[in-house]
Structures are given as structure tokens and as C-alpha cells.
Length: 391
Image (cartoon, rainbow, N blue to C red; front, top):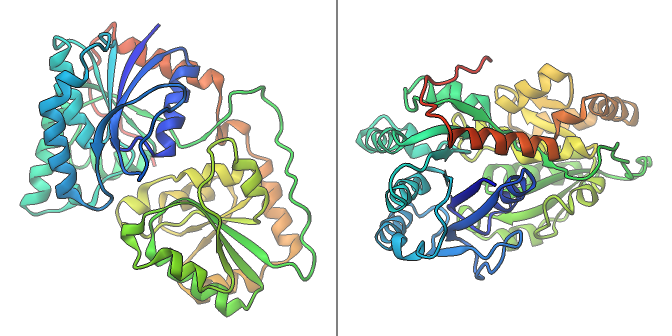
């Protein structure tokens, strides 16, 4: 049985729990270690007691670097008693540094996988800071055997043109994890009555101030004809006062965190559309990612709204589903909903339902394939050229 040492940047991130469950479902055993950004300690994740490496903070790059430096010095003592892993996965650049340290601790021949699911804006700078960080990434990845990322645009727009990674690439999209039998999901959302407002759900990592302000201004302009429902984990460092802002909004509600994947059908059944837009790092990472909410919303019948010129919009266009805005304005949103009626909405829902289940879902068999892919790294040296992913 494959034993994976999984080093993560935030133990409290729901996506970490999902990845652990995926590896377990595929037949791997997982030792989990990482930092946390939550106020409360994390005592258990998917029946694993994690090794806590300390606290870090959103948006505080210098503090995170210092925390990683301290962890490098103490990692050996923290890993005492941990059985030698077959494989080490470092989830993002800072954890790749710790993966290299762990590899040395375990005698130096344990394969490393670099899991990169976002391209930090500092890596894209053309000044000395950006060049130094890209040099660090290239150096640390020299000991890796595989790159896991979640969007082909990250390869096309960053890894390939910058010449960062000379590795095979595995694109593991942010699909909904379903480990039960393959069955059709019953969408329980009732048909919209004439006087009922349209509801847009913005779920997941809430970090985009521009989205919050745009949805606020738009919902006020629509005077109750469209309501905004927020769920998930706000990045409070990105907002002046998120809770007060939402509390003062007449057509916006925040319902807190939710369990992923357990609560997904319930929360998406309560909305008509999903907000699949992110301006947090517009023109860079936000344009290239394929967010969790894209797959979650479509799996449960919620119609996605994206921005033209992004990888998400390209994904929708290729499948003939959802709606994409030409510009990020209240007027563009208002035009979309002024033209929205029940027939148009139901046609959009039917287009989503016509897609293959595998478009949205990562199932038990996919978990096994992922673990088998990782297991091959323990038997062969797979250094090779970067995969060129077609547009």
C-alpha cells in the first residue's frame, strides 16, 4: 500500500481534506503535516491526526516565509516516529521546500510531487523579487518527479513559457468527489415562480473584493429581483469588514462554512446560478484557474456565470453551457438578467444536464487511477519534458 507524506500550507483548507480522502479512497495511506490558518487547532482530518507545523496568515508572505524557515529547522524532529514514506507531496511552493527537507531526512531517494494549484502573483513579477522566486521554484523542483496542477492554463500561461518545470504534468481538475455508486443526481430545486427572485450563489473561498462590491451594487440595482447567497470561508484580510458589509446589504446573505462534499447538493439546490468569477488576481491566476465552484455548481444544476477571456469561460464555451459577461459591470449583469426568463434559464439547465457525469465528478475509479499514477513514481525515474497542454 502506497504511503504518502502530504505536506500542506493550510490544514484547515477543505480542499486538503478532499485530496486526503481521494488518496485514501485510491488505496493509499496518508501521513499529513502542515500549517494552519484557522483560529482553532485542527485535531483530525479524514481520521488522520495531522502534524501541526504552526500558524500562518493569509496575505502575509513574509510571515509565511519565516514560518517555513522555522519548520525546515525542526522538521526532522517532528517526523521522528513517522514511517518512511513511499512518496512526498508538497502542496504549493513553500511546502515544496519542506518536501525537499523531508526527502533528505528519509535518506534522499523518496520521490517528490509538486502540487501547484495557484500561481502566486509574486512569481509573475519581472523584477528581482519575481526572478528570485522563480529561481527558487526551479531549484526546488529539480528533486521532483511530477507536477500536479488543476488547470491546463497554468501550464500554458506560466510553467511552459517561463520554463519553470521540466517535469511530467498531471492535471487533476477541481471536480466534485463522489465515492458512492454512479447514479444520476436528482435536482430538487423547485421551478421558479413569477415573483420569486433569481438567486446567485457565490460559494467557496471568498477572497475577491471586486466580486463582493459588484454583486452588492448589482443586487441593489435589481431591487430584490436578484438575491446573492454567500457561503464558505471569507479571506478577512482582503476585506475592510466583510461581516458588516454583508449585514448592511438588503439583498445579500452570508450563511457561513459548509462541508465539502457532504453539503454541496443542499446548498446549490437553493440557488439558480453560481458565480464562477474571480478578480482577485485578474489577468493572471484568476484568468487561468478552473474553480471548485464551476464543477460543484454544474454537478448540481446551478448555471455558471463567468467572465469572457478566462479559462472558465473557454471551458463553458467549448461545452455550450452557462453565461459569460463581456465586461465586469453592473450594466452587463443587469442586461443578462433583464433578458432572463424561465424558458431561457431552463434551456441553460438542460444544457448542463446533457454533459457527461465525468465532466464534473471524480469518483472511486479516478481515485484508484490517481494513486496508481503516484505509485509508478516509486518504481521509475520519470524526469522528462513539460507536457504541452493544448488550448
